[in-house]
Length: 383
Ligand SMILES: O=C(O)CCC(=O)C(=O)O
Ligand SMILES: [Fe+2]
Image (cartoon, helix red, strand yellow):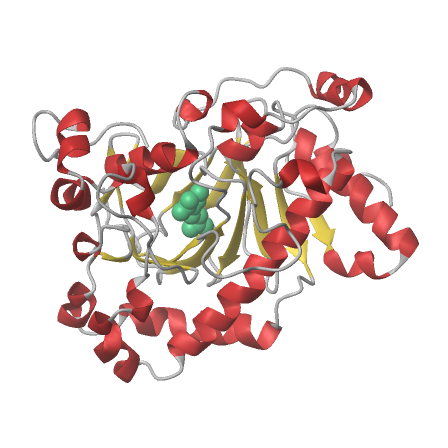
């Protein structure tokens, strides 16, 4: 397959589309892998068409999405994130901060099934993973109000989790590292999800139309923290933008039936920058528009390793591929610089604390004081 000219080395002006169904034949697989390697190194953002996730489940989840937000406000508040030391649950409009500014979005944070093993004396960051409020008694009324939602969502999460393992194995293959090299990050391997080993996060997000004269920050420029993000754009609205090497914002409009896949800071760090993490943002829909919805899935890695200790080795000819893309220009995002120093779980907890100070104040009071010495902010710091 020929390389999309708009995504050749240098600065891309559109986001490439990779077709998962190509993997079904040897020649198709070779083309997919060539395109994947190019895209990882030069772009860092892609659409995945024909993904191995049942379209019926994807469509059912998309259909539920507005209905979750249309629930009565007190039902939503009953599973508010402040209840959860795991930062799961509902965040009302404007409760979250990115780069010191309020994000105009409303969201539910959920996770793949996981039972917390944290006990007093363990590092505090191990408390970050635990039961999602989707499986919590508090959400029983939510389940009654939206019959079938939880089953579809859990079925969907299991499929995207498997996709995330299959995809990261392909990333290793095209960058010519062995699957064993991924074991520090995925201690149960990358062939089958095993409940209770890792927890990945997912969200259901609503961006209401902005009011005349309001900020258009749906979510401000940021990097994702983990390895890979798989995003469903669940309504037909533009707004998602990704920053290219020249620092220009490129639109990534919805394409039905696809995932948007992007690379997080942890994967960029362990691949010595070969796989590019890409700064991205969402602009709120214009005044008078219907809301935009999205459903991201964030692939995590083991909490207790310091990413900086497990940077992968690459063949010199692979490392050389970075040279053809030119210098990565200045971008607006500044988060996740700490992977070299701290366990990933702690880095992720810092991100959560900065984004959701009200949750931190309740469940991580020492960290709250450290990051917000002046108390709950009207404006937060950069995440
Ligand atoms: O809503 C979107 O399309 C993107 C959301 C996002 O980038 C995030 O939550 O990390
Ligand atoms: Fe993101």
